[in-house]
Every structure is written in structure tokens, then in C-alpha cells.
Amino acid sequence: MTTAALSSDSPLDTSAWAALRALAEGMEGTTIRSLVEADDSRPGRLTLDAAGLSLDFSRQRVTDEVLAQLRELAEQRGVAPARAAMLEGAHINTTEDRAVLHTALRRRGELSLIVDGQDISADVHDVLDRMGHFAERVRSGEWKGATGQRIRTVVNIGIGGSDLGPAMAYLALRAFSDRDLAFHFVSNVDPTDLAEAIRDLDPATTLFIVASKTFTTLETMTNAEAARRWLVNDLGPDSVSHHFVAVSTNASAVSAFGIDPAHMFGFWDWVGGRYSMDSAIGLSTMIAIGSDGFAQLLDGFRAMDEHFASAPAEANLPLHLGLLSVWNRNFLDIETTAVLPYSQYLSRFPAYLQQLTMESNGKSVRRDGTPVDYETGGIFWGEPGTNGQHSFYQLLHQGTDTVACDIIVVVQSENPDGDQQAMLVANALAQASVLSIGRDAAQVAADGTPAALVPHKVMPGDRPVNLIMLERLDPAALGALVALYEHSVFVQGVIWGIDSFDQWGVELGKKVAMGILSQLVEGIPADVDASTRASIARYEALR
Ligand code: G6Q
Image (cartoon, rainbow, N blue to C red; front, side):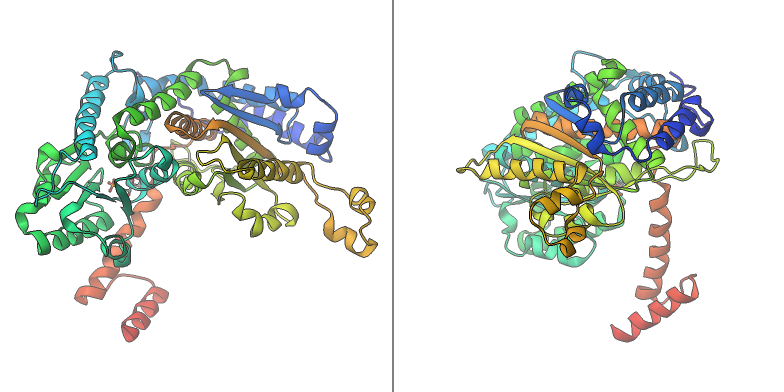
């Protein structure tokens, strides 16, 4: 296994980059509308299917020539060998010298994968079996709290990668979850987060999952200790082992906290936090949807992994999603992508995707430390439709910035009621059309619009839109959707020559916060700048 497949050269030095630059310049004045109107076969040709999902990118500002050249860029940047290196367990997270093997979390049990002399596939399935056993005991009521009552509420305490995935998945899969159990997700060190989550709970029927890879994260450990005090205050110290379990890689810290190692579910340093929702970090998901449901979730991830690993470039859906992001970012100068799921169940999906994309690809130096002189990771944000239509879509349609849009449509509702699902889908398709095709002055005038109002009602269009469609938001579809974006992020990182799997940018803030905390709590002056000193003084005067 080798990381030689990973380039630290500048993508600007490839012939494909230069060709794409020329194509972009040649396309000035070419609108998405003109591309769509010129060719009836375009939607069919520019739609790919994989793992039960489809991606229609006919509303992107691309020609066949651009697409071919983007695939050539992938070839010249070594996306295929880099993908093979990742899947084999090479240490492609070079700055942390770690393998990147979230795909191993969903491999078939019978397929071994030896990494550093260890069959990690067997390890994964051992943990999955233990999780399954535990989850079914909680679901059936066999697992009892300290007073002999069954668990009614599960509180996951974690942050970042140990929170966003489970919180997103719980909401996404509520239709498949055990309605006799309630779930809360506590992440913020703001004491309000835990206080509001537990204020109406009965300690005797509450189970806390402390989810932390390191088991040292300030927010998580602070909240876990507060939760333990709340429990012990009511049920005494012996109750902890009945009401706390842990998900971590740090057995000694788990044990020191007072959690029985038998109630710890492990994972490994080759699972990055933001890539961990299908590891033991997904324990709350498994309790909610059962071990069979969780197996279906993993099936969906695996189906997309297998497609990404084996589909030819022309048919490869995650490859195209990643390349289109590069095209929009580097050649059309589009800085942000709005993620617009037309599904209330996917209400936290934009937040989840924000971490996956922005923590992974928000980097300014290549693997070898040389600065990039081109844009890398774009900004991802969003809200579910149709709600966003009544707020920020105005800027999407008529603002001076072009925002790319990923519209996600779920065909079948889990709660069908009359025409409501058709209304939802009609809105999604209408927005896809108006954003990309627009409405010109002649069309607006033809509606009888007074001349003075025409310019106000023109929709410039030309906003690139991806339309992702899934039949039903079941566990398998959610797995496939997440894996699609994971691999898209990977493709972009390889093109840009950056390490998508480290996160040094979040470290310094934590360190500075600890210094300021020492001043606020113990009066030890923090070594900070003049503005921060002034803010501390104002805070201290007011508290
Ligand atoms: C994810 C990041 C980060 C991490 C949290 C929680 O990729 O590394 O979001 O998940 O800081 O870390 P712990 O799981 O160690 O508490």
C-alpha cells in the first residue's frame, strides 16, 4: 500500500486544467437555458443512476466537451489510483499519518481486509454484533435502568462528527424508528443544551450514550459529567453503569469516567469523525431503527462504495458530483452551494453536509505544505424546501451572486396525505427550472406585466442545479446519499491535491479558548490580543 498515488503537484500544471480554462472562456454567454433548449437528449444523457439514486446534472452549465475534459482532469490527477489507495488502507491522511477507511465499516463481513497486519473487517463486524445485541436489549426492554425500569429515552452526548451524523440520521429515519423510545442529541457546551434536553426526563428511564472518539473533547466531557451528576443526584453512584454507555477509541478514559468497558463500543483511528456515522458512533441510530435497519443503512453505503470503486468514469455518479463541484468552483467562480432537500426528514442534512464538505476541503495548502493558488472547498449551506422558498430563495433567483444548488427530491412520502407530496415535488421541480432556465424580459412582458415592473420580474436563471432523486428515504437510500457526498468530497480533494481528512483549522481555537477560560475561572491572565482583552474586560464587568 502506498501513498505515492497522491499528487502534491498543482492541478494548474495539467493540460486538462488549461483545456477547461479555455472551455470556460469559450462558454461566456452560453446559458443553461440555451444548452437545455438546444438538445432534447440532454436530460437523458446527463443523468446517472447508482445505488437507487439518480443525479440529473442537465441543468449544470456544462457541455459534453466540458464533461469529457473534467473526466480527463480526474485521470491526470490520479483519482482512480488515489481511490484504490484509500480502499486498500494506505495512509492517505498524510498529515496525521492515518489510513482513511470509512468504507471498511460497510464491507461485507466475509471479506477480510488486512491493514497493518490486522483483519479490520473482522474487528468491524465484532463491534457491529455487540452493538446489535445491546441495541436489541434496549429496544425490547430487556436492558433495565438502576430501578429495574426499561429505557424510554436515549440521550446522545457528542459533538461535531460524534453528533451531526447521528442527529441527522435519527431525524431522517424517524419513520423507521421505534416510537416507544425518545431521542435527544446534546452537543453544545452551552449548559442550556443539556438542561433543556433532560428537564422533563426521568433519570430512571434515561440512557446516556457518551460518543467521543478521543473521550477528551471539552464539550462532550463537560456535558457527560453534568449528566452523570444529574443521574447520581437522583439514583446514586451505582446507577451509572446502568445508564451510561460509551462509544470511543479511548478505553482507559472511558473506564476512568466510570463506564464499564463491557459497555464501550469501539472504533479506530482510521475512521474520521465526520465519516463515522456508520461506525459505533451510530449506536443511537441502531437503537432507533434496530440492527436490521442499520444493516440496510450499511447496504446503501456499500452499494454506493461499490459503484464508486468499479463504475467506469462516464457512468460514475460520485465522480461526476465531485467534478461538477470543481467546475463550478474553479472555472465558473461559484463560491457557495445551497443544499435544498425537499424532505422534512432531511432537515439536518445540510448541517451534516456542511461539516463533511467544509471541514474536509477547507484547506489552503497542498499535501506537501505548498500554498494553493486556486480555490478549494466551497461553502455549503441550506434548509429544506419548501420553507427556504419563502426566505432566502429570493437571493438565489435574483441576487448578484450565483449560488449552485443541490435539490434533493424524495418521490414517495412516508406520510402520504392527499396531494401534499405532489405539491412538494412540484415545488422542487419548479425551483430547479426557474433557477437554471430563468424567465427573460420577453416572457415576463408577454404575461401582461407593466413595462416598469418587467426588470424586477426577470429571472436571470443560469444557476447550476443538481437534481438528486430517490424513490424513498429509507435506511439504504440514506446510506447511499451520504456515501455519494463522501466520495464527491474525496474526488475534489484529490483534484486539489489537499488532505481532505485532517482538520488542523479547528485546533487553535480550542487552545486559545482554554487560555481564556483560565482567566475567566481562575483569574490567570490569558496571552491574547488587545481586542480580546477588551472583550474579556467587558464580559467580566457585566457578569
Ligand atoms: C470530525 C472532527 C470533529 C470531531 C469532534 C468530536 O471530523 O474531527 O468534528 O468529530 O471534535 O471529537 P470526539 O469524537 O473525539 O469527541
